Image (cartoon, rainbow, N blue to C red; front, side):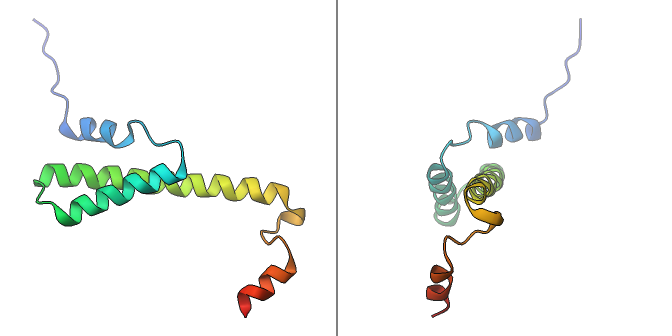
Length: 95
């Protein structure tokens, strides 16, 4: 008889945390807000709360990657790698 190693709960939670990441930034933020709201308002058990926190961290990192990808796409379109469309817009922001 072959003995199987028990799968640690952490491995299962990590798989849940990265499962099916949203494709749009808006969906990522919406799910992250939902998790935060749930953690703030519900009396979840510790294991569920930690799992949701892990999912939230994964979503936060995913959102940052989505923003960085968008930023790089915009920089490719602008001359000299600047992020401002015109100097006039920068002056308006300072006012």
